[in-house]
Length: 503
Image 1 (cartoon, rainbow, N blue to C red):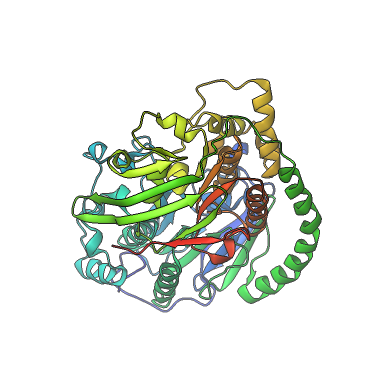
Image 2 (image 1 turned 60 degrees about the vertical axis):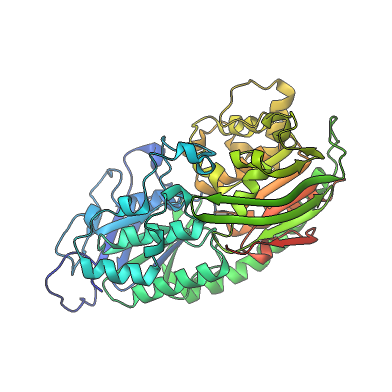
């Protein structure tokens, strides 16, 4: 397989070849600048993980590596041999966090995935890939990643795992010398994670492709990675071997867990002490589905599903990528038009019996990858949180002072109070996820629906958010439905499981 630029010959790698060098680099624009000058050299035979906490500056470093912003002094030095092309644009491909959800731009809106009548202009996978000049490369990549069955699907209907494979193949078809991927394993079921890791390892072995991963899970470094670049508080540390990094992380993490114990216990007590609001539903059955089936064209997503969630129960919803988990949640949250044709009751009231969508939503707190993908409002972070009071994408009704105080309280619970005035789109992807989580909790919902809530969060924030969920669910009559592909992410309060099979 010819990966690594368009070339007609191949020669041995020089012992000291470096694909990218930075020497005391400082970005000219202070708004996208790291806290200290960056000096580094990435060896041509190194596969590197850039790791750091949410907001540490990982994406800013990637922007420097790719030459996105001009520097005060000099430019990045590149050596893409054996590729015969020399520009970063041709040799470096970057699959960013939002790219893993598909084309997240102004043409996409939340709920579009569930509205078939609004999908006429949505392209097929086949159309986006387009004509490929290198037919042998196309055949090998399509076979390796199983792309043929996806070609006639609309891009927004792909599951998380299917999207990840599509984005990777789309990038590799351009024969890059360097492939950079932002958190490539998030949202993938265990088998898909194992498959992707194996595929990347095979690609590394081909010799002409260098892989750089940007990771928030500080303790989960794939075996094919040779070196780690730690980023902390917008400072880039020294490159170290994977073994040295994991040893240092394990030592630091043991100390960190001790330091976290008391603050997290106090955090849980603050949540347990919350007063209860008025106007709560008292129905014994929060969700009831009777023989629910959902089809899109010739594909059946859900078939004759019966499911009852009683008040106060905590459920884990699982299943491989594409099994219908997100579709099921869209029915419960009244985002899917097909819900009106199904026998569904929420809080004891059958859908279509006269209640509005907003009457349903005001009792539900919800976060999902689809919501994150659609949230392109560049409002101050606290206004994003406040939009959860009225279930809007954006803030169209000004909250009163007391409500804004509640928003700030929840932002403090999630550790992002200091970011309240920062525009949402200037936050890191992990900080955005924390803001959307605060948005889900802000109205103290009776039903909390969390679809991959720890997506993109670093190791420490994952522990924090898990403790928050556990404390919230220990309060009287709080009902939880949570989706995750990592068993260790589930809170201790989970007592029921529903596993969906792919149809």
